[in-house]
Image (cartoon, rainbow, N blue to C red; front, side, top):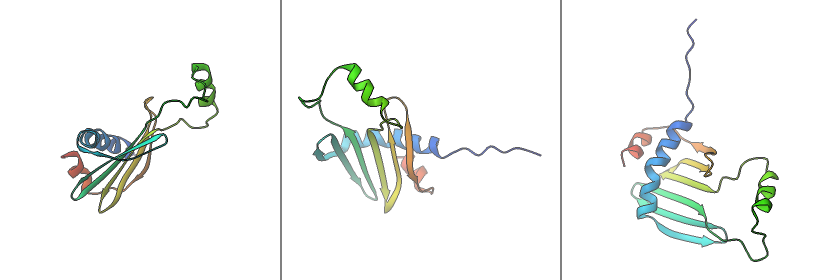
Length: 121
């Protein structure tokens, strides 16, 4: 019996993110900045991209010590994923989140010919 390994779509989703993100950061516009989130959007027919990043300093009432921050992080069952990217080509075809630590989550990924088009942008 021959074993065939099936790869997950995670690598492809991350490759698309890595290709698209510099375009969004270079050409996108800040659409919304509210609280701790900055939303950057880019429209390139037939594409639409939304990228969000954390954007705020600690409020005066929050402790700034590293020990306090680490204690807060340990209270979470999953790592915080402060960055995100949504990709639309007519409909939403990709949504993923990630952190500086390398942790990521592919929220949704609709496979199709659009993948090669996105990698060619």
